[in-house]
Image (cartoon, rainbow, N blue to C red; front, side, top):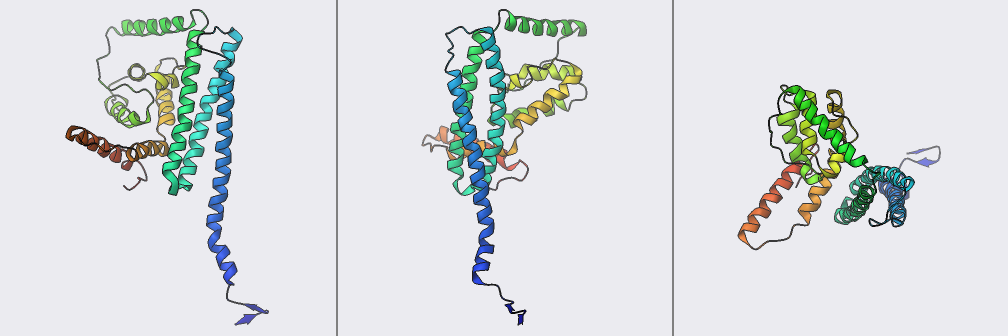
Length: 276
């Protein structure tokens, strides 16, 4: 049937354009995300050049010290931005997931090395007595609170957490089960427990919070917000699983099988699990 001189049937060209529209949108989104990632990589290079002006052996002025402190905070924020961009790219470009995970690992390694170098520079050049005073004050607060309670907190053994995504799920589940969900433990005591288990990058996430009942929930939420990134967790575990080396020794093979099984379970028990 014809209506108004037009055919009811769609032209082959129109159908082809309609079918290709989703792919065009994906390619457009990928291009935008790749541009954003390139911008992040450029800023990493700029920060590296900025940091190269200082060395761990050279003393720096107080103004430079505080300048580096401000720059490292923005640099750490940029790592979160990169993680979000990269997670979107990995979702859209799943056909080349291995390649994308390699890119993630390389860029995250750059972040880690620069953050570690910055930490060394700041620790060596900290204003006289500031780090010691902070540690002494924290230690005194712990002792004073223990003295005021009249007892030491019972030992609850949980593996320390240093900020590694591979260790987060085990730490989170253990801490929640033994301490966070234990109504017999006061919030301030939970904070002391939490603080005692953290080290490295994880410890710095809550380092600016004073230990108090009110701040315990804030501290735990900060850690969960930082490390409970499901896309990031899946990417790390999948990358580890895909890069396992074959072992001929029976003991090593058994250990490898255990690691593989744990990795699969870690990925699959997350919301919207990846089917392996």
